[in-house]
Structure formats: C-alpha cells, structure tokens
Length: 207
Image (cartoon, rainbow, N blue to C red; front, side, top):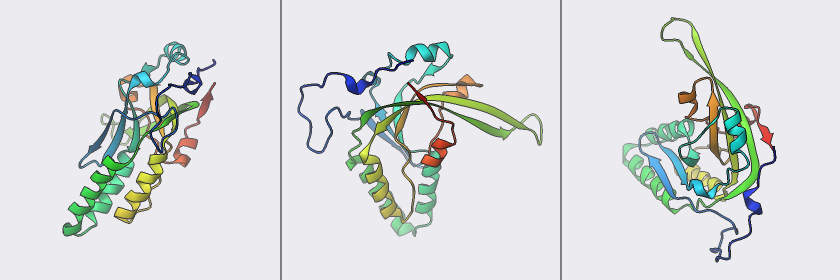
C-alpha cells in the first residue's frame, strides 16, 4: 500500500524560526516524570497524516494510539538516570536533577516527519502468576513513524555531561498504531532504546 508522505504537502507560507527546518513541528508539551525520570514529547495528532495507513491498520486489527508522543527518556534510560542520580552525594543530587529539568525545558525538540514508517514486533516473556516456574509469552506489534529530531542528540550529550553517563539516544519515532496478542497491553507500545534494539524487532518498511 502506498503511504502519503506528509512532507509532500505544499509548504506553508509562514516564517521559519531561525535554526529550524521548514516544515518542522513544535511539540505541544513535554512531560518529565519525577522518580521514573521519563520524558515524553507530546504531539498534536492533527500534525500527522494518517490517510495512507488507516486502512491497513483497520484491516489488520490495529488500534490507533490515544495520543502521539516521542519518547526521549523511556523506562530503561529513566532507570539509568535514577541510578546515576542516586550514586551522587546528596548535596549534588538535587542540583543535578534541577539541571536535568532545566535541560528538558530549554532543549529545542522541534522535529520533521520522515517518510519512513515501519511495522515492528517484539515478544514479551513474564512469569505466569498462576503456574510457578512457567512463563507467559505475549507478542506486540506497532506501526511507527520515524522523525528527524536534532534536539534528541543534543539533549543526550548534555544529559551525559551532567551525570557522567554514556547513555545512547534512541531512534526518534512516534507510535501510530498498536496490535498484538493482548490488545490492552499492546496499547503501551514497544519501547525502543537503541538502534540495535530497533533492528532486532524485524522492522518492515511500510510503503
């Protein structure tokens, strides 16, 4: 199925802020969650053209995400941030956290939609609470939209400088639709922390 590329839409005759690419989208909000140290960049759903993928999603029983976001810090990297913060002397910990929060606010997270969309899947294995020693297997699938987000690397470079860590910026993307064995759990999507993780999810280019 051919997917309409949003970047092919006629350019808007509005001034482009200095440092931003024409066609760039400014996020609606940024949500940093204390404790978990996760960071989500909220996106206006109206900014994404779904006309070319909606039919395929419906045919395959996929569910559209209730809201669109780009994950800057997911659960895995959030745990690494927490670990690094806890390793600091108490006198430095709060200062580092405040620097991170300031970084969240000052980073330009404007992005451009890329033409690439992928189908990815992952199997989750967890202990069976009803059968000791047994495991439950659950397959999740997603349709994702790749984005160009220069601020992602800038954020991670500065975050690593604050914490003395070497965290890798994840592939910038947003989840559009989800599917899988368990419809409710699948709605959480599939976390992608590194490029290597992405390649292990059998990414299939949707074209």
